[in-house]
Figure: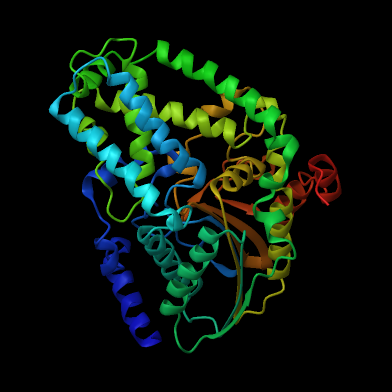
Length: 456
């Protein structure tokens, strides 16, 4: 197994990421890949075309990785949404005739609704595409640990953990399979599984916090989102009515935004499947048409606001939802602290598998998404297509540089990004001591969070 892994690894370094896996070609659909940036948090993982190199004259000590699961089937709440959207589609179009394109779209939506009823066991789990995304992420991650060194490390100490939800467990397994496949045989490997004492609290805490995600909050945020959506509908791009009339020729102007959003949301639920039913074909056509990207941008903006409120990034939560990433941030800093003591022949790495909501909160704690300011100011930075696609990952790499100077590099989706915290604002590297001290001050103790969340 490792021999074939070395061959694939050599091939990977020679010809690039997009050719790592022959299996991945099965899931390539050029129209859907082209549509990816417009799909918000439902976007398939955007595979980078190069690795971010380590800083000059520095030696890698530790890699800390927190990632979202791979592309998945609809969740239970979304399976309830599919017939809802189908009925809404029917209500919107019941008094008007559909074009041939509209009729095909409606039949595909009906087929999707039927499919969901017949495949209940798949719900929430990763799709074959999601498995491949995480397998390839694991395969590529080995290169972070071995490829950029004159000699591979003699030993690796790896720990893995997940939120213990089916889709994160299977994502962890796929990642580990790819990671192991690419590992040079001469490297001694020590691995530990599920090292967190309370993985759900660290990686899924927002699901345990009723005051933040309880009925009252949900109702309030739904009202806030509805107000935002109403404002957006009043600023509908002029071309949107034209695209709506491609589906329903006599579509009234006032119905156009809701019709387009219904089509778009059905596309979001279909796009991750191994063999999509084609609910994204109509939105994909808009990309190459005049004004089409404006309509897609408008639809993505609605979905981005929906996730902005869902993830607790709004002023209404006053940072309380973002503070639910405190246990995760503390574990990250603790793991990095241990990495400081690695000897020159050993690298350690910690891999966690979580969810898009937690990735968004972690990015807020790291101040990549501003933790303060008005909703509009923070939303201007927020882009779920970039920040939280399927397989999204935040990595902190600890380096020992010249004069034993310890530095931290920050990566989002395998690409180096500049720090935004005050000690090293807009810098590619941050002093470990400065980053550690600043970020530790941002951690809210578990006792405070659990008392607020009513968690034992």
